[in-house]
Length: 324
Image (cartoon, rainbow, N blue to C red; front, side):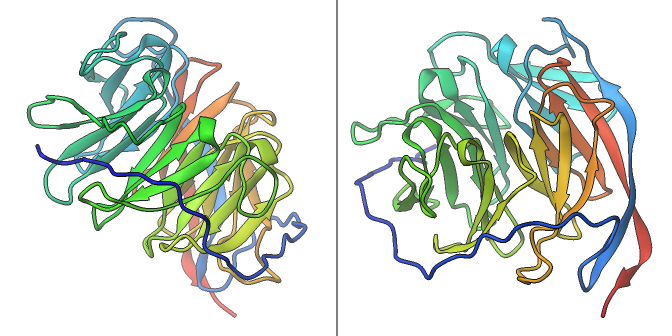
């Protein structure tokens, strides 16, 4: 497909108004206005085990669900993408170690888009490139342009308009491209300032196309609008944040490697309520949590890099929404 022809030139960040960093407060199963309260999050299954065979994993990272309830896993240590169902049954694998088209070196991030056709995107981290293919023929193409110098691209996401966002970890930035592959903007440089990052690891979107970036080295999560204007910064309680996902109720889930858990935050842009730790789970099951994705039915899939498997949790909500 004549898809991505990227023309990248460095641009400065758009000035934004100052952002407050609010010290979080721990609350127990309390919900912000108009959200369902979380009653519990229970471990229900473990998929796979350490190994190189079908359905086994080595150092898994990025996870993504397709519309057919299949789970795509960046099986990083095995340099491949594995496809399994919700019960862990092996469906297919894509790729192996190498540098040719359709081969990978420590792939970290995945995205699927159904905007124009079914497309799979892979952050081929060790090869410093993004590869993409149609899920129909799986014929990979590589994003190549002399003006682009990815350094360990780590995560990728595609929004409902087909616009593409990439975490360029080694360059401490994220970049947004149009559906035609034209650069729209980039944000970030090395540092601890409000528009700076230290080794960012993941990027996610909500229904309003707001952008969430895990600023791992600075132990924080940052929220931007779709134009790249900084909205909010979460800090505190994040010791070594890795990946982020949002559920259907709008809660934010962050895997935290050092605490061996997943932390749940509110997401209402309400200064007095935001940044609160709503829930924390997985301490008894997780060894080194990295990737995370959540189904519409509230199943949470967490890639456990240290356990070399996928842990599955189920969210239990209240039946009615909480309001003022």
